[in-house]
View 1 (cartoon, rainbow, N blue to C red):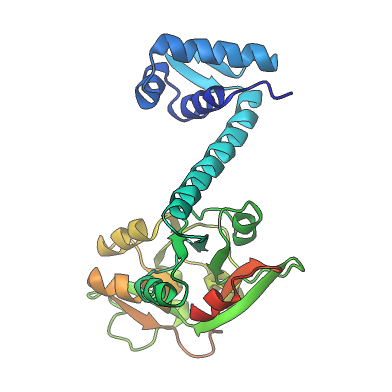
View 2 (tube, rainbow, N blue to C red):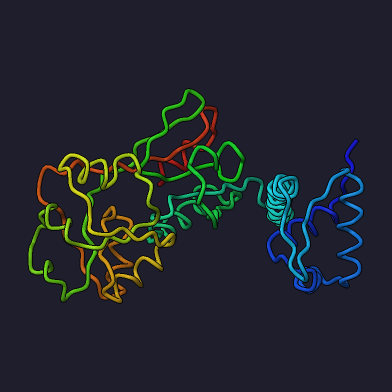
Length: 288
């Protein structure tokens, strides 16, 4: 028997984020006493404490953290279902969610959207807003049907279709001392601060193809998380970046930055479309 109702789950998720009864009440449009009552009732129903209280600050217990993760997944899935139903009620019979690596650019999306409308008029295409999870997890959890990535997934239950080969480029301000070079010697990067989306090494990216083979590391690595934050760090002359050219070329140009290829013999980066093995989206992958 399910002990918690949706109103318990929404309160637990919101309080887990805000840590404040008043902020949770404001966000959900409820009174503070109603929030407190629902938390007490949820704790009574599951038979354990979910939050510790220190003055006005609420922190999750280990049990609370476990329930918070599930509550977030449940509410995210309900949001996706409601959006799908909204599309279907307006004549759309298929909704395809497209995920992409956090460093992927989207200058190709308008073209794809137009071609999709011409080829599949009853199909809606959406970009998954948060792709912090690895590509296989996005598809396994039904968060996305197709994920674009430069890290191939070798699993029998997934299809990893090569799309296009790309090159790694150095992104820098126009007045950087390396900007006068047509190509960049990777050994010069050892003296630089590098900004990246995350610190852990990715398959086929700069650590595996540049730093490890040459046995060098940058002076400092900064994790920026988002492409816009990464660009702002470069514009502010706090760092340079190494990214796939197709993912950054237009954004770099708009920000007044330049890109330079690395010297020869740096392996190409391949973009892939990841889908389930039994996926019916082969035609859309071909459009991409």
